[in-house]
Image (cartoon, rainbow, N blue to C red; front, side, top):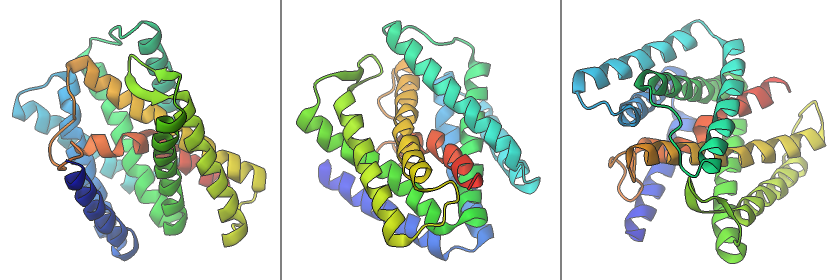
Amino acid sequence: MLRQRILTALALLVIALLALFAAPPLLWQGLIVLVAAMAAWEWTQFARMRKAPARIGFVTLTVVCLMAGLWFELYQALIWFALAQLILTVVTVTRFQTTQGGAIWQSSWLNLLVGLLFIVSFGLALVWLRDEVSVWLLLLSLSMIWLVDTGAYFSGRRFGRHKLAVHVSPGKTWEGVAGGVLLAWVVALAVWFVAEINYQPGLVAFVLGLSLIAGLSVFGDLFESLMKRQVGLKDSGKILPGHGGVLDRIDSLLLALPLYWIFWSFA
């Protein structure tokens, strides 16, 4: 299982880097739309949709909304989408934890609307961070999220004592998240001096902003775990051997990347 997981991760990394640096803008957009479509298909499970026509309808709606956002260049709208996601995610995860796993909402339509918000925002941010900001800054943003995830895993195993949200994800600890954020903070500080980043708000805003958003990405992970628990799912899908579904791989990115769009936009 571990070998399969590592091989899949390496394959995904190679494909992602090739697309990130070699794909022309239209191909990059097409790839992101494809990822969004697969994520939308998996999200329909959270709304307990079983019939293929209904699921295809939601996928189509997601793709149309994403392409419309790209076509009409709704940059300002993404800022509001990102803030709405942040508030919704933090409030929902906190409520689920404090009620010890109580239902968050029963409406399938509301569930789908939330999925539409998250997936479209993720797609817009991923396209614009590469094409409108910088491929290197997008890679830096992604690296911050991965650093938090990696640092949280190892520091959690070594020092983890206090559960972060036991009713949402029993394995996560406060010590783990702190270790992950600290690792991201150190790397961001090193990048500032090594790469001579020209971020107008300054060093403090750069380091704290990068590491804070990376830390908040944990809420994206928790939110997807919460959605799966609501419907009794272990994984969102089976398309990625050893990793589950597309949503299982991009859950942290769904929240963090739109926030990074704000972060770089105000530079």
